[in-house]
Each structure stands twice: as C-alpha cells, then as structure tokens.
Image 1: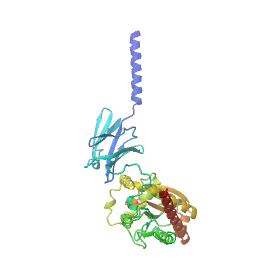
Image 2: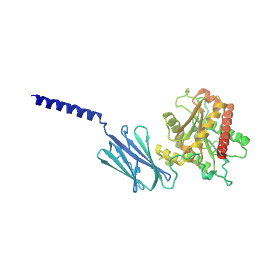
Image 3: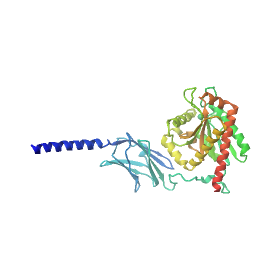
Image 4: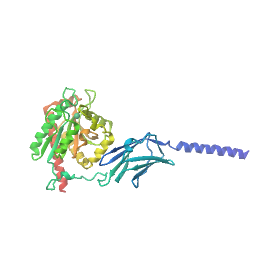
Length: 386
Ligand SMILES: [Zn+2]
C-alpha cells in the first residue's frame, strides 16, 4: 500500500516537474526571412524572426565565410531570399540539435558585425577586405577633400532647392508651394554667402523653376567637387491646417521613428515625377543602410552641420526647434560629401506657412543657414589646426 502510494506520489511529482520544464521552455523562434543588400562597399544581411529573437552567438570565421548560430531557432521554408543566395553570397541553413546554424559563404571579409535591429531583426554587416572597418572613424577627412596644399577648405558648397517645375512639393495651408519657398531661400543663402564667405563657390542644383530628378541633385554636387550638400524643404502634414510646427534637420540614416519615416517617404515621393523610377526600386531600408555605410566618413560632419543649422535657426527665427533627426532620404543617398536635409517649417501650419511665405521669414531662415555654414566651416578649420 505504502509502496503503491509512493509510486503515485513520485509519478505526480515527476509530472509536475515535466510540466514545469515544458512551461519554462520558450517556444522556438522561427526565422521567416534572410535577405541581402549587396554593394561594393559592404553587404547587409537581414535576418528576421517571426517573433522576438531570444539569442544569438558571435559570428565565427570559417574558410570561405563565417557561421552564425541562433540557439533555439528554427527556419521557415523559403525564408532565404534569392538575394541571399546569389553569388558571391550564399547562405545555407541547417539545424544541429536545437541550434540553427547559418553558414554564410562570401568574398574575403575584413569584418563581420552582428547587431539587433528591433525585437525581431538581426543585421549582419559584412565588409569586404581592404576597406575601412565598419566602426566610424574619428572625423576622417576624405582624401579628395584635401586641397593641393594639403589643407582642407570649404571651397564649394552645394545648395539644393527641393522640388521644382511639375513637382510643386507640399501645398501650404495658405496656397504657397514648397518649390517656391525652397528656391527663394536657396537664392538668399547664395547671396548671403557671397557676402560672408566670398572665396567660397556656391553651386545651386537649380536656380529657376525647373524639375530635377533626385539622383541628379547629388550627381551635380559630386561633379562640382562639393564639400557640403544642403537640401532645403518644407514639412507638411496630410491634414491641413495642422498644429505641428517648427524646423528640423535630417542626416541620412535609416529612420528611427514613424515621424521621420513619414517625412522621408513624403520627400521620396518626388520620384513619381521622374521618367523612370527603376533606379529607386531597390531602395529598401537595407539599401539605405548600405548607403549610410558608404557615407560613414561624413556622418560626424553631417551631424555637426545639422546641429549648427538647428542652433542658428533657433537663435534667429521664431520657428520651433525640433532638433536633428535621421531618415532615409533618396536625395542624400549619392552624396560624396557631408550632407543634410532641412525641413524649414510646416506649410500645413498656419503660422509657419505665413512665415515661410514671407520675405522676412525667408531672409531670416536663409541668414541663419548661412551663419550655420560659416560656423561649421570655422569650427572644422579649428579642429584641424589642433
Ligand atoms: Zn520637400
């Protein structure tokens, strides 16, 4: 009797323990997508899980590539996108016990960096050999920016008046077109720079009411040997009038929040006026990451220029300071120089729109941007002499 009871007790206990163990085990995370964005500079592999990704191990180098291990993960059929299985890249997956092992074959690499991107995504940034490491260098001056006397100078500045021609941009609550405000401000900046930085050449991507494709704008800047690229825009909300107001400046990086993504997608919509949109088709978020990596030597300079703009606009105009943000703007993608995009104010806001449409407002904004260019140039020259 006693022995039967102890058997029953033991059985109940072991059942409880089993339930406890099963209850504690997390359901396996399943990988739903592995996609690659390849450029000569780097390859970004996005590994997306269907639910929160619980863990991963550091990539291990093996001959011909590297291995990634994701404990407790499984992989869905067809998760490996064709972009991740096209030469020179090839991703293979197999499960060894409860570990998902991804073998990545690729060209000889210098660095492989794995990091989280949100709860469900892992980004694996692969840099080919003989390029700089992924870590952003300390204020590197791109070689082409060193003049013949070995001294960097801000000798060519490119001002890009957003939109133009058939692309009117945002339409203000007061009927003002964004393309007119941006052109007026751009011309005023040019005039002001001629006074305060007379030895600096100012190149305009447009100085009349014409349509220019987004990709052409940085092409013009690069061809002119620009050392700084500034794209001028006005913000807008879909519903007008709208209380959102103020000035914000963007650098090129994948958007961090919905608000930044909204601004970028509104500005990127200009491509619908272009004859062929094919060149932008691959502009996924990962492509923006690749472009950001290509611009890594300019990131700090772009950030410091953006901060200078916000500070001067805040000092010299009544526009609210919305700070520096980041998002994936197509117009900045090709720039081979520090670059920013300014959203001067909201045309969907009555007070901002009135200011943006006024000569006084345009002159004040242009003056503050010109001051920001001068203080950026001065602080940069100072940092070089230390
Ligand atoms: Zn715009």
